Image 1: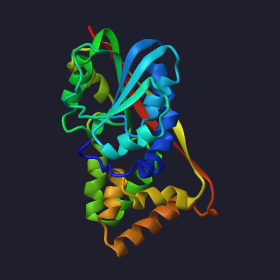
Image 2: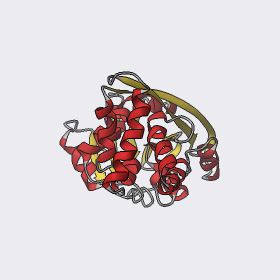
Image 3: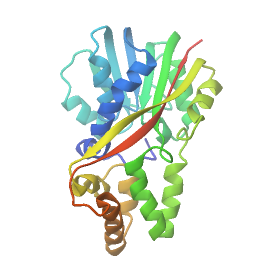
Image 4: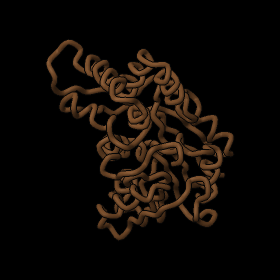
Length: 265
């Protein structure tokens, strides 16, 4: 998506892909998608939701679509399932006919679309009547511990960090009730919003911090904008939060996502 750094599929896997694999089955179960001819994954990234969907033999075909060619290339490289295809495309202008999918899902992507309402209407448009439109977005302010550890430290150290935190915590569709309101505004029926929580497990502080100095996502974007002294100061503050006075080693943090589903009338 245009407001998300998306340059390297391998780096995205390290930053978020390993966790989206844990969230994907929870979203699919919540959406109730267990039998279909065609399912669309909007903003598929490196393909973890699409791959999980294709793991169900009762689903005939899954198409993953993302604006980032690097992510699509990564997804294609790791795919050997003939029922699963990946395409470059825009969530706000889906290149599919009306009612051409049984269900449309999106995981951790819609909040980065330049026009979230349009992206939701597009998902509805390409889904048949009676089909499900579902999505998940992180609860960045209230339920995403690892994310907060970095941005809260940044906000205390630098006015730029305070502004970056405000942007990160107030993205569309990330606050209580946002998804349900957007789904109802799009004219979807039977709208239900809930939450699902996974654990993010890190082997060490290096494992936790390395993605922050990578190329993908809001944290890396902010860290990459800092000069070396400010970056080192932020790293030190986050390391103190990670260690909590104990020796370096494994840590596990909760990450909660909002989930929503609705039916096309």
